[in-house]
Amino acid sequence: MTTLHILGSGSKGNAFAIEAEGGTLLLEAGFSGRELERRMRAQAIDPASVCAIAVTHEHGDHARGATRLARQLGVPVVASGGTWTALARGGEPCEWQPTGSRGPAVVGPFTIEACPCPHDAAEPLALGVRVADGPSLAIATDFGRPTQALRFFLRERHCLILEANYDEVLLRGSGYPAVVQDRIAGAGGHLSNTACGMLLAELHHAELHTVVLAHLSQRCNTPEVAARTVAAALERTGFRGALHVAPQDEPLGPITLRAPAQRVLL
Ligand SMILES: [Zn+2]
Ligand SMILES: [Zn+2]
Image 1 (cartoon, rainbow, N blue to C red):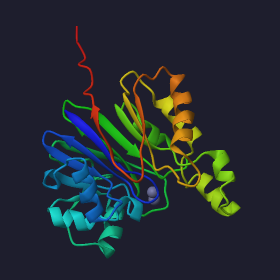
Image 2: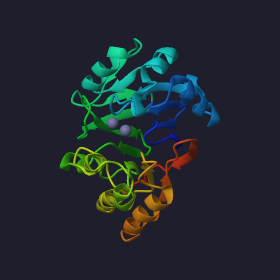
Image 3: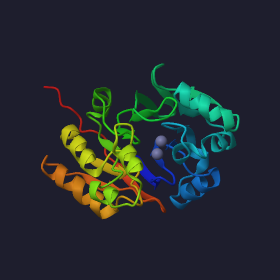
Image 4: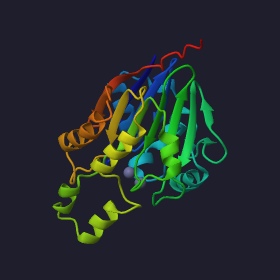
């Protein structure tokens, strides 16, 4: 059985944990090492079961505790070369396992795939995780517009963790200076609830069973507005799965990720 734990998500920090076959993959480590351990224990995840820490990019809200916890647990950080170089500069010495242009990384039961993500960081990625005979999941946050490559990468996943950062009306009434508003809403900024809903409607397929809305802005969004906007877009596609909104301050889960239905060959 494969389970997903949302340890927390938002501009103050992002982290998810996937458990399969006795191993745990930490996906993002945007809290301090101590806070990550606290949140794992709150979810009854044994830190000793962690086999790797995969991060999309070096920004603090995604990788704050990555190198410290990796060193402490004796596990590799899985990241692009650019992200690793940026992390190694100020981080604790630990092992690196590349993913991205060099192909997927394999750690324990997890195969970690990657796709470039358009964002203002060294070499940011969207990440995909496959478990043998189990579900396939992908996470993409911190991008303003999905590229064709990203759309292709996210298709046919059973679980999608996608950014729903802001509501257009709440952003324009947020009190942020216009230049900041435009940066958030720009191609290199963040994905709005509406854009997230449109992307999910495009990616919808019969075996998409779990959607997690992540990285919500505290100032320009609310869980209710994000869920309502995306649910309306997904309902039109016939989506019958579970829609979760990732909380910032406390963990959520475990969420069981169903294995894909066996294809019967006649
Ligand atoms: Zn970022
Ligand atoms: Zn971020």
